[in-house]
Image (cartoon, rainbow, N blue to C red; front, top):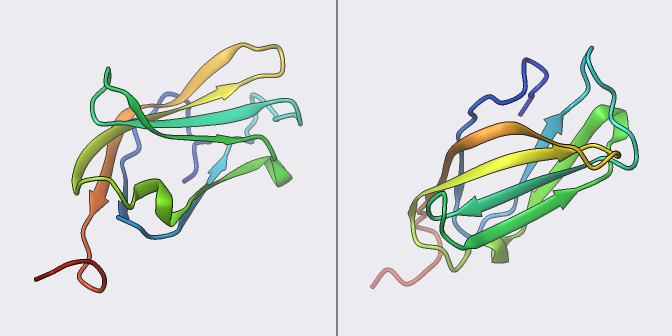
Length: 117
């Protein structure tokens, strides 16, 4: 995922339930260079106003990139289907900036594991 083209864009994500996934967010651009005190937050919910199901925070920016890891246990109990997420960059001065507006977060099925009786 590369968001240097402009903040506030919509970027849909999809992953297989129970898989390990990793996304790299490039927040380095002409307008701003991240510092060690900045951080990114990603929140997944069933709907915009429902309870938080997944919360991730990344604060290490090697070469202006943040890595967000999804562990199998993050999604293994979720139903297949569509959820929503957004992502925010909080600057060292505590000012938040939405870098990915509310977008789709799809949990896909698989047939290798699970109860398929």
